[in-house]
Length: 199
Length: 199
DNA sequence: GTACGAAAATGTAGTCGTTGAACTTTTTTG
DNA sequence: CAAAAAAGTTCAACGACTACATTTTCGTAC
Image (spheres, each protein chain N blue to C red):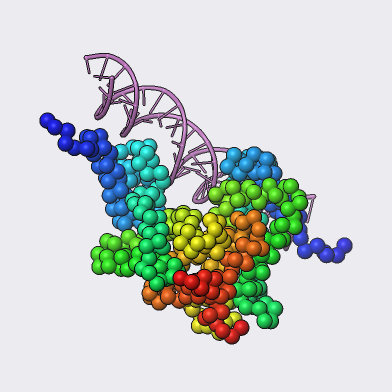
């Protein structure tokens, strides 16, 4: 028998266990509420030990957010590969608003709506989500500096990065995301334009 | 004898216990490091039980930050009672920079320097300190809106409040606080001026 | 000064997330 | 097939924090 599979049996099982854990966690969390479910419950539902659970996910919160990568790459790309003529703050505004819209598309799915509501209503999850974004502040600041021709550790670039990421929260909690994005980014766009007249 | 003392024996003891706890905590934390000291160690050093400790301080982190009030009042006052002619972002910049300077004055004291270093180096404490400030975002946003003649829930005002509070972190981690404050607030000042040409 | 009620302090036991160590099972590799 | 490597399990424990029942301490009124 040819070993045409690049993925061994082991990695398949690993992926399956991981998936079982994530699925069980999501189901239980949506059913009973995040705080009403212990890690032991999740481990039992996935038929693994608690110790094993923590070998797949570094924390209880990580069970909810399965994909934590891509965010940084997309963020940097939004700045670097922005459509010509648009300023950096504009590009960031569109990128963040796009992330919102992508969610809005799935709002039809009641399970997805319940998921986002759970994240927003649970402090631990809300904080973790926010942390997942702000973790990439440094990378974003570097991309902005490079793109604007500013020195590496430029404070204004770091500030723009931080403010843009924080603006996400403002956009998120408003009923009209588009208007909230426009109004909160207006500050940054005008401020940035004053500092960088060109481009 | 006249009862000139509004404080009975009970309240005196209470205050003393609280002080003993805070002192013991600070001493132990600075000595061994925050994560290397358990609440039991602090309680033992202050000669009280762990249960009593948690009746005085709601969490381990609260042992470090004894005064959590005043921040909001000072923040709102900085906006409302700003020197005429100054814009709101300018007032906030000065207020935040002032908080930094007040620290800088004590930098001579090696214990104070060690304290701030401990806070910055310990994630749990850094987060707690940041939370103490951002908790007053709503109040600050309201004060700004009132002062600018904007409607209650104006997004731009909320954004300015959030950004200004976040700027504190940028200022704090830079070696030259004054320049960092100027550069990061430049964004906000210019942006705000564009939206509110008058004052 | 004593008796009584309120407040405060204590010890115990327990929850919950998380980690470490020792041991067993499975999988890969030479 | 044997040996090494990796993964899983069990058991124990840690640390922050809480609920509970109990006891000490304080303020006050008699």
